[in-house]
Image 1 (cartoon, rainbow, N blue to C red):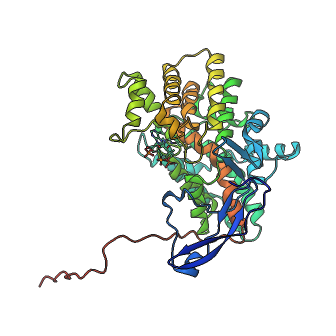
Image 2: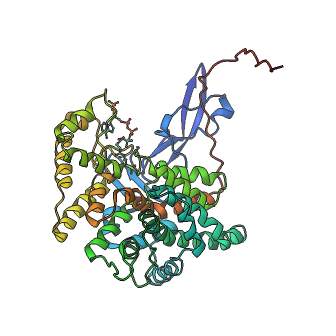
Image 3: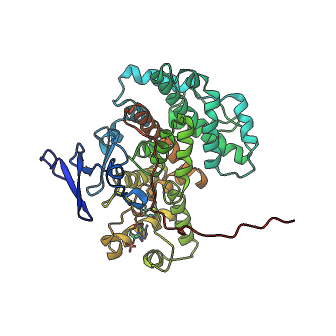
Length: 439
Ligand code: ACO
């Protein structure tokens, strides 16, 4: 990263095998410098090798900004700490999707759109019956979100004629229905009847009502619970080019529709190295609690290169300091447990693990700090969310980010089909004996 506003050279020189070429330099708002290799193959016939794309900027984006060295996250330029203290998840979503915070009137209108779109088509409910009992809710959610396309006739009709209207309507539809579908995927797995959304409830409370209400006893969460879930969703709303967002963009680059692209993002999020880590954290804490390992043994196991085990909820591709979202969730965790007057031995274990890791040279040298998943699962547990729904909650939170990124891609005149290359290391041209046909 170059110092902001300091002039940087316009090109970088790449020399290989006695030949040099000039690569244009691309500079971001905060001084990040990239070397534009988009014409490298055309000019030299050579490729860039970057496994996991850890050094590759795949797009220019103005949605969220991370400075991993300094533990900074901003949505549209606003620090996450400030935004989450003053605006709710829906306002944050509007900021991400529309590029600016809503006016009071816009917020009201969007709230009405969410209410109008909360119910799913009755025939969609039958889709849930075709999943086996105990089907994973992430599998159900991804399939259902993809199917939503078939029910959004407006999107299908309007996307070429009035894309802004089509995308904005689909965005409200997705934002609202993802919560209904998520709650129903839980109820389907439990064999419970579906609860209609309640238009009088706020976004998070409405979700919790659809999750936990009984036919003659409505569940309305306490304010603290609504606020905690709201914070979790807000902190997950976008995070630049992470694995699932990149998936959404890759699928979208083939001009796949918004629903299909987002559905693919849900599948990517499911993985334990990404959104599924919040489940892996609880599994790890539970195993320690059952007496499998002491916190110190767990730390030692995570450091042992002969073990595949990692300290789940620790480490991040970009953050090399404390993840700012983890910091906010740690405080929220203390608040929720204090207000609800509940205790959870897993919280004590998590605190102990953090304490041990933060003073261990292995973690210090590799700059491994708690990430967003370390404390979110413990809060969700306190709220009563079953473990297999944790990543689903993450998906609800990430929805506005995925939509915003898809929209940005759609509106980018310079976007191209994502089609990476490879360095082939397989067999060279091979002579072979064809199978002889049976006579
Ligand atoms: N526990 C123990 N060691 C770790 C951990 C961990 N959680 N994370 C990284 N390391 C070590 C690696 O073994 C490696 O050590 P080495 O240099 O001696 O070989 C070094 O730190 C660098 O690790 P990489 O895997 O190269 O880092 P990368 O950026 O590829 O991985 C990741 C980031 C996947 C998040 C990793 O830290 C990890 O597996 N964490 C646990 C899973 C997790 O919490 N995922 C959630 C991430 S947040 C999110 O997606 C929402």
